[in-house]
Length: 246
Image (cartoon, rainbow, N blue to C red):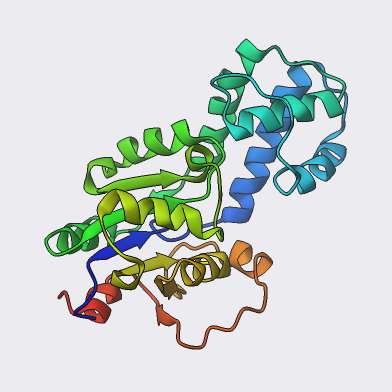
């Protein structure tokens, strides 16, 4: 792949791993339910889970207030469904708190830093991630010590569109001065493959067999997309060989 000038990564499940993502989800749901109960919601945990099943797939809430991320607006709307009017000034602390619970126990892929360092010597390197509360992504990258390794960080919440919409990839390309045909995108789900193809970028799908992964989420997100012509790797370090950057 001598023509490649840019390498872009997904975050969750690609660079950031979990040994038990289902347990992480359960802990997050319980923390979220506890916070909403303290605000006055009367829903049982099972009822609350039912509401959460559609939370992220629902249309963006019409409620809008300056400075509110998409997830903050979803929490505000969820409160209304549960019969609770959470004051706007209390939304941000609540959201920050429960998202940190979600990331508890997650860790950076052991190969991530060395692979990105090696890539930076030859390529523009970027991060393109779907996430509805952008401040947490920048905070998390700083906690992991890798924010400064990327030439561009594009978060769907800030951009206004999410994968597989090609515009989120085009934003990263524009920021780095790389054309679609000169880029690869590394992700762990079919939405990553679909989105990169939509943007004219070569997809690299990572399917781990021996590291903490998001296999259950990847399965849930399966759409039956054909993977013909998609480069597949089982660990990040293999990417250097694929690109001829060893």
